[in-house]
Amino acid sequence: GPSGCHETMYEEWKESLHAKAYTNDAFQHHCGIHGLCISCHAPQPMDLKGLAQWPRERAVDGDPPRSEGVNCITCHLRGEDTILGVYGDTGAPHAVEVQPLLQKSEGCMGCHGQWYYSDIGRQWREGKAIQDEAGCLDCHMPLVQRKVAWGEDKRLVRQHTWHGGLDPQQRKDSLELEVEVKDKLQVRLVNLA
Image (cartoon, rainbow, N blue to C red):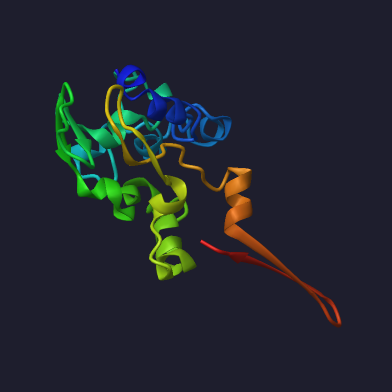
């Protein structure tokens, strides 16, 4: 499984908000049984409908269980045994197909571009990051030089941490506070993303 061959990425995922997407208290309190929410917080593989499309929800007794939230198969499984990646087959013990959307912001929009939640996709398209040609992955999955799997040479790959708006450091890096005192105090919060 991924915890053996892709151990570093698995360990990053395990601590991420994606791993806790279904089990976190806020989700369970507000949406825990609602299918509209579950389809993004415990999705079937995104490739069933298309990586940038709204996914189907994972079955209550599914394998893997809903408690794994947004896990490896969400973005990386096609069919029963083909793994989607960014490099293609590099001698892995399983079939690997290149999926270009794994390297583009559009690949995140199946869930993060939904109007009923908070259209993060629209915010990104209208924000500063797109003007700087930065994509979602540039901040939320930074590039790092390391092995993809056990026994491979190091290469440029993405971290699987997905730091977001609930992460204190990400908020600090993404926001700027401007304070001005003239006749009155003026405070302005600027979204740098």
